[in-house]
Image (cartoon, rainbow, N blue to C red; front, side, top):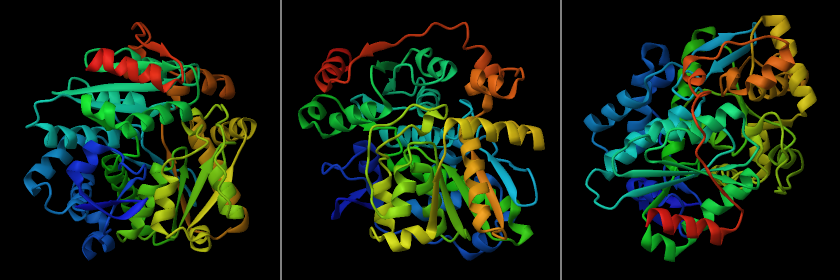
Length: 435
């Protein structure tokens, strides 16, 4: 698999080097030189294959021979170990549940595949590998679970103080061992900026071998392509157009869907659903992209004011706004609208959406107003509602039982180091603790 930088199409690197480097030196993002289509039978008859079989074919098609097929099958078997069921709300509205993994969030797919792939490429290295990851909520817990006790790998998670849910915080601050949590007195964008600065710091990289576990790392995007195929498989016999509705923060999930489409998946359209951090819906409407500081909301994993993967979306369509806006629609919503949607879905369908899925539901209903016969909308439900326990219980006036994986966190002690948004302070911590 050959990759280039979105800032330098002439650059070429291997999958192994791209995974370990995380970011190109020019601050772009790695993208495949070629996005090949999967074989016709997987396009026409996805219902004939299991989730793991679909995942293997997609990974094999993208990666090529850089990972031998036997090793790649083992990576798939060890990472894709939980389902992604599609639930029907009504004739045109479906929900793709992506929260059946160990951390109860869609990012388990990416984190587990990444951990297995990195461990495969890292097995002959003698120097420890440090994974840096910024999280607005779910990424940290998924990465912590995926990499816990991985040989030769250390993880440093940066998260914004007071801006993740209590249970999300426990997921990334209670594991210990090779997992280190840094509580940053700022926003997710500040956390992300610190991670990017570290990767561009050549002096630091000479002393600490580093990679990233954010969606900026190409090995996070590859497995996210898998579940678009798995979702389509489950409704393929209905012979209707399919629209994927993607709650979006850093826009890695939507980017993976666009890659799935380019690999042959028959998707009619994508909808980018955001909260009030709506810089991409604004771009889709006006053609102007204006990053700005993020605003805190109840759908905190989408509190991103400068989404990194937007540059990948631009790259996929040669930065041509007139083409992009025909492929993607975008809508942003307030917390009040989000709560109202949670209540509506619970009252009408007895289904509990988390705040992120509720934003997706709102975007689908908005799209339907101007496209009433648009086909089937599949809303990505990215996290289990109990990860936002207080908000869901208060909004719906119900009591929820915690899944066992979350219930046991309540008694565990939080272990995190508070730091400011100063890069010097962050770099000093890394050198003192990991060098």
